[in-house]
Image (tube, rainbow, N blue to C red):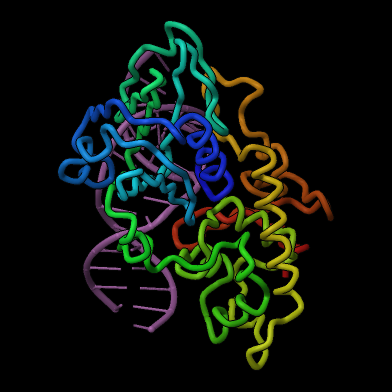
Length: 294
DNA sequence: AGTGGGACCTGTCCGC
DNA sequence: TGCGGACAGGTCCCAC
């Protein structure tokens, strides 16, 4: 599910529901997600007012008034729902329920935050590839999961010259290089496929072939531009929602309807009508147009 | 050093 | 209808 645009959407939803409020109660319904919750996790959060939310790559960070920082990663299937006044508000790209169904505890509801205003924030994650951690805010930059993360693709430090710098001499395929979180923070399988399609670049092309004597090939300018564009469009659309729930409604993210190639193997390329092809690169599906992408 | 593959989990869908 | 296998938005860790 969650790449940069979806994480950004969820982060904004959490910010709206939680920022400025105090955490009255933290309920852990199991001892771990991808990793065990740290010692004293619930106790460190309880009673804290949440000052602000941030996103770094696909991580959500919440600053607590006491100087601690709550770190959240949604993995593949992590979701949040906000229950206020018996009603579940859609949180980002996800689901919407009301009344009794909303209150029924799901088998994969692993964490429940209750706020001082009675709002309950429920974290659901069937596959449990998500994670949560808490640590002093001053240690965020050196946190083992954050310290190696590359530049934010929507930030000012991301441009063709940066791509040239990190791609120089690289024999890895473009697809793999763009997915490498140490180079670019937050791209995932969908948006890499879409950006490469828009830029007309073949996913198997070696990254280093777009750098000449340290200077970016003009196609890197296009690539950087399209990465920003596709991410921004997806954020505006509220992210993408795949593998729908039974309770979906119009409040889901809508960007999946605008995929040009992702999950469209066999369909006609919007540009040239050739069938979109699916290949596997390092164990993951890549979708592309063999005619438009060189 | 850099890369590919397996592992971690559960749910869903498709073909037989 | 049931069952096995493939596959899913991520990424850590460990062999090459």
